[in-house]
Image (cartoon, rainbow, N blue to C red; front, side, top):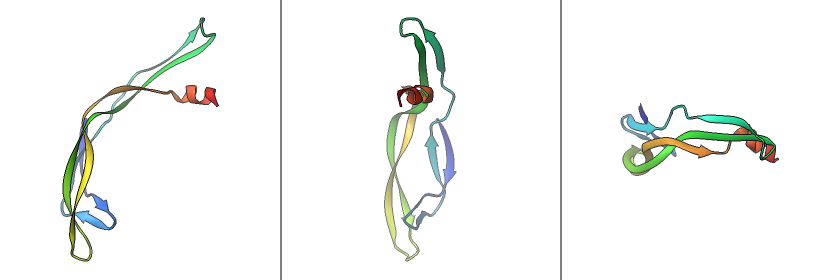
Length: 93
């Protein structure tokens, strides 16, 4: 997984400093092959997705001077996870 530093904003309240946020990104495999048995194309797709997440908290400051604790989730592990291919979705319509 990767990370980026950014300010969290919720309902007009912002974190005082940028927060290190993790995210999943990467290239995962996909295939498209003809199957004689099914007499059609068969698709296999995977997407990069979180496999483990953890909650974290940050204090947000609001314009009226109040502050609040905000809980958010972020990935701690990512992997290529099977998913439905776009072409397969179109075929099922």
